[in-house]
Structures are given as C-alpha cells and as structure tokens.
Image (tube, rainbow, N blue to C red; front, side):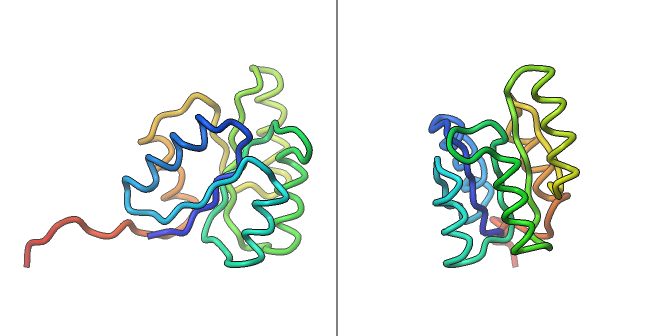
Length: 131
C-alpha cells in the first residue's frame, strides 16, 4: 500500500484518481492547490505525488521543482491534458525537472496503476483470504 498525494485543480479528475487508487488499496489525500499539497507533504510525507502540470496559482513544473528540491527521492507522476503541443512540451520538461513518469489525460485506471507500480514499490494489500 502506498500513501499517495494527488494535486490537481480539477475536482472531477482528483475524485476519479482517488477512487482508482483507493479501490486498489492505497491511502490517498488530495487537494486542488499546490501550496496546500506541499504543506501536506511536509506534515506527513507521502510515498508518491501525482501533480497536474497546468494549474492556476502555482503550476505543476514549479511544484515538481520545489518537491524534488526538498525530497529528491520522492517519486512524482506528472499529468497533463492541456492540448497536444502544451502536453508534449510540459511532460518533457516535467521529466527534466525530476518527474518519475508522465501521463496524458485522459488516462484509464489500469494505466494509472501500471505507472504507479513502476514509479514506486508499494504493493496494495492482498484481498486473497486463502491460507
């Protein structure tokens, strides 16, 4: 099980990501504001952060840079849906800033879980009760 922080200004996207991750057994916290998310990381560090690249106030690249500056080993998945040109440029730069992986919106739950598994070694609790 991972502790995952989701930072995205779109409530629907956050809710969808949280549902997928919680359904897979992960502990999830979410916020629509990068500064609040960084504060959550300071209070009780997460195993992985998912951050949207295009947000008002503090955008995702700045958020990634700040988190990686304080937590260099923190896996971060950058997500973006800002159109083909914006998405491609931002995701490439996100990797340069230290993102472990990128996902282009829209993405499915299986794709999200696959990228999460590659980014960090957190296993969901087993639902198998066989002895």
